[in-house]
Length: 141
Image 1 (cartoon, rainbow, N blue to C red):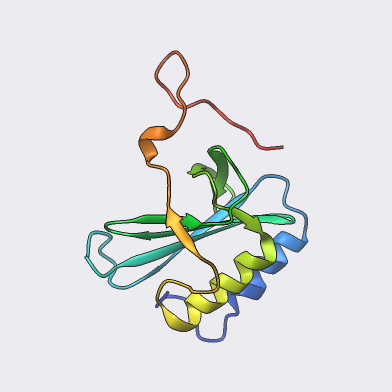
Image 2: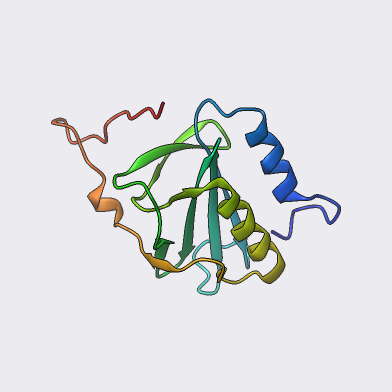
């Protein structure tokens, strides 16, 4: 967060990307706290967009949370900065306008947003694997 230029409206920038018509889901990770990802007080909010739907995932060094009212029932794939496959846990998807509201709150407060209720996310170990033991190459259409 500290690297975001003061005159940049990050919510508007991500809204603009989404308004162009996102063919595959994109996700960004916005972090607050020291650069060290293992620092106990470090937190991050993953925000994804895919046209009318988006995703939210709140992460600390001891917890991973998703919205209580998230709509996806299985793991889905978003693309970090539009490029790298990133697994998104069940219940992380919400209407995209909710994503923008939650991101705006986080940028203002630097703490877990309260605009939605959160629940513990499914563990990474619950990602489905194919017969080779590798996660399936899932493409969201």
